[in-house]
Image 1 (spheres, rainbow, N blue to C red):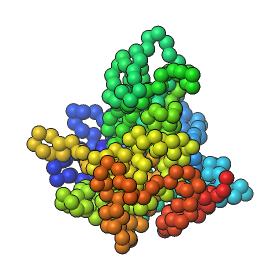
Image 2 (cartoon, rainbow, N blue to C red; image 1 turned 30 degrees about the vertical axis):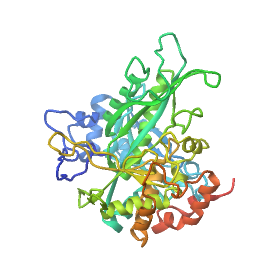
Image 3 (cartoon, rainbow, N blue to C red; image 1 turned 90 degrees about the horizontal axis):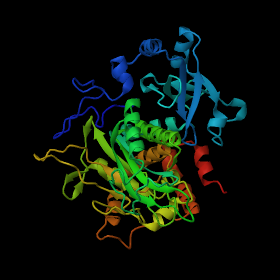
Image 4 (cartoon, rainbow, N blue to C red; image 1 turned 120 degrees about the horizontal axis):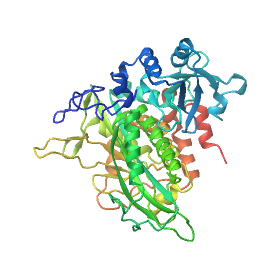
Length: 477
């Protein structure tokens, strides 16, 4: 379920968010279907969706889901009658698993899988010419069990495992950086490279696109933190016929499975909005050498007994969940590039060192660190108005969010059982802007594969990552 608030059910000591899924009086919910149905998404039933389709003359149902490649897939229906409608949203439909999860070990002769719609995930397709109701789906095997090869299954297993092993509910939110490109014309007010951060119209042409994306996502039920223009700007030239400017949408904290799905939906919305305007949208790690790249930083927050756990128990001592999380990231961060840095230009982004990590370090201030502890906003009375997070800055726009966040959870579980976790934290602590003795991050696909080959047991623990998926990661080209 995509929760509609940034923080979970807990009341923080100095910060009390709205209760989860509460329809607050005076302020209507941003989720459009919650407003139309009059209930929080977690309370929706098949009858609610059926009544809405009747009232709004919605005749098409679309089942969407995330394939093995991390992209959204679509299966459309025009229900013939009420029984067919209930069958579709209640039971789903079969699909070809060998096509959706190629090279995953699913045999062509036994490739039938099931799509299982989630009623609470419904939203109205904002880009369809005719009214379409979308439901996000999970994947099941022929016996109805969660499909091991599905990214959705993998991240749910990882999320459940970290909670069972450590008692921690791990929440996350992504920072989705992207470039918007268009052919220049005489109306453009040109900016300057590395000077676009928080720029306003008319000095950015895609401000309206970004704002429409924020409202569209909110109406779909994707919780948003904020959006703004980013530093990147690429003027037209011999190597580039378009004017490109960079923007960012930062999402809000959700449990790992929902956080991953929100990133995929955000990219889907941005691509569609750009296409409507005749623009291009790129999440590439680097568009042009020497210019700012697109990161996909993830902020992580542990909760225990529905209460937020601060990274610190004192000024110089971490809480246990922070130890396990930071220790896991610095110990296995390079290997996680298999899921977080999947493009050839991923290495160019890191080598350019434009606020991108170039060594395995953690700290509170340096944006070139692999792991950072960002500042937390407070009001005049000193009350925190946001949840403190632990930021993983290595991933980029090529990331597969489901597999990456599942890998982070597995790394945290591994650190929970490490005797030397404090040594790893100590040896990667920044004591200057750069630390010469810090471990290096991989600089090639071959080095990432070698790291996966060495550490694959961590990923495969408790059958979270399927063996065949790991085999494909380390297979020679």
